[in-house]
Length: 547
Image (cartoon, rainbow, N blue to C red):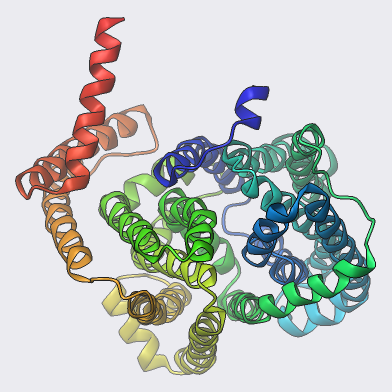
């Protein structure tokens, strides 16, 4: 295990495979975590409060990690490392000092501001719910601070290419949360949930410390005078990215505020739906963006734009290859999947139906969000932070304007409510409004993803034809997959209860049929990625056969 934690990796596809592979186990834990949430809380005010309580502390985390972040720090770390280990240590120590100082000051300010902010943003909570919100939010300030420190450690580990350890962090965090739900909540009540979150982040930070110590790169609170100016330079570089992330975080807070006002439990449903969208986004989009970023920084620093373009093209082609079939599966089998994963205890069949409707919208955003993440990090790598800021600022502004105009209009217009219920087939007017709120979030993301992709490709002078060809091939194959999966779902398993062992086998069988049709179609279209996968699969089978 120690060798795995300390091993360095430099190939972008190997790194992405490690991140994606370990993330699979992380998401198994995530599903167990969310199933525990569903069982104990369903769509309830307590779980609404739990979800909303992360938002204000997230502002502290986002600002801290944006100003002294992996995207700004990695190029500086690369530069200092070339100047020698002592210069790198000095810069790391000074940056860490300012990070901790900011976290202490920011936490103190927010600690006293949270009650007023909570009353303003989430006045639809009951008085008991608001009290719990304040308590949770204050505890989560510690979580946000520790996560910011963890993010700083992560930047150092990425510099040293220790991606296996990085891939474990989310998994360990989820273990703490599961302990909080299953063990601490029954023992201590709602406060047990917050304690589980703290436990998860403590484990997350703690596992990185021994590796940093062993490699003699654990930061210390020891600033030096001549590195203060360099830290200010890093902060100035980070201002556009910090502003972009802050605008996104503020948008999330305002969206949550509106969703809470739709009905009790609406934010819970929103959370469960978004958690399914996050699976392909993190497994594929985030994995490739994290893997590619340090390599893109190196190529750009060396002026090797041919290699830079090659990494971008390869990452986007692999994104299309892996994420489109996942999106198709989740879209087609969303109700069986939600029933299988969440329908237990307090999570009823009615909640399953509305969550499925919301997932049908959200899952389309997995592709657009992945494109946004990859292209944003590529633009950061080549110094185009301002372009990313403008795109994300525009996206946030459009979403806020739309959700604050359309949702109140629907809630105050019975004809609009009736029409939405008729179109969506949802029994509750509140759920129909929640469905529209989801559309308001996803549709602007599609335009933002298209814009940022065009900006990136033009800036690096990338030939778009190979990417369009790859996208077209994968889209055709996904259509075949959709038909092959939907037919047995409709005609063979239409009335099945999927929250059972039989449901697992049924979903597995439909997945095998759909995946086979998808892969055969890609091979017939002579897709290069499918050929690579086939070769690797044959190689693994031969190796197993020989042993």
